[in-house]
Amino acid sequence: MDRSHITSWLTDMDGVLVRENHALPGAAELLEQWRREDAPYLVLTNNSIFTARDLSARLRASGLVVPEERIWTSALATADFLARQSPGASAFVVGEAGITTALHEAGFIMTESDPEYVVVGETRNYSFEAITKAIRLILGGSRFIATNPDATGPSQDGVLPATGAITALITKATGRHPYVVGKPNPMMFRSALNRIGAHSETTAMIGDRMDTDVIAGIEAGLHTILVLTGISDDSEIAKYPFRPSEIISGVHELVRPSSGDAHESGAAGTQDRPADPSVSGSSDGSPEDIPAEEPGAPR
Image (cartoon, rainbow, N blue to C red):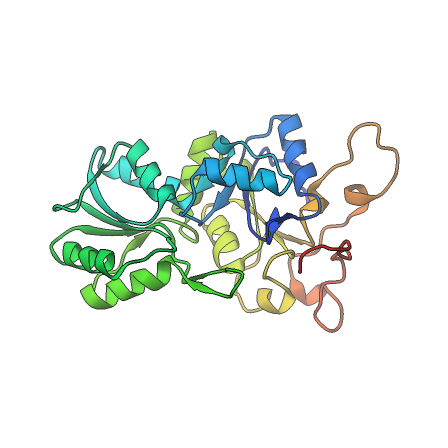
């Protein structure tokens, strides 16, 4: 697949660069390649709990150097969207530092008294009192916004209810559906493009999910790259009527050998998988070209 026209990059975080707080093969090298070439890029995440500074520190602990200005969260995208809609407006927020900080820095006033918006983000401390307040404010005329649609999130003990689960409760009580800013809304990608001054025709989106990363990338007019280090495999890909521009086993395939690297291995000898899963993978449906995991690598 020809990527010679690609000059800017958007990439998902979990399942693409990291998995269970461990850097995936090639992630550090790809980030360094972009830094060395001064390529505009952003790391995107639907997680609205943490600030970009928090996430930068978490990635650094995983061995990945991503400056906070290179991180674009659903909270930042939500604050950017609302600031364009109603500069200096008021909001009642159900969420944590990621969304409250983003809205505060965008000039919003936080209030429980007749706010223009009720904004629901992800949190690990949903309270019945806060949800009840949100329901009453929405019924009173406040506009309903959600940072992202994810119904569940991961934890060491299993899945946890996330933003989508809470907004479903509020919708049931109010009959109002939120406007959701995060993936798969291409609005998040368009705001990311604006952030780095990039154009859709020369930007690629790397993700591990067909239902968020790929569909939103297609709708935003981006070159889409699906990696198989997250939740997608050939059987998952086959469920959808659309296809990414290309499918690769992991971001290590995007790393080019540095000058002076004489050995013919790694990214230099890698062939892109065809986007049609019917002609890729082994006979049992498992991808043939995923490299063996290193000892101690997370599963």
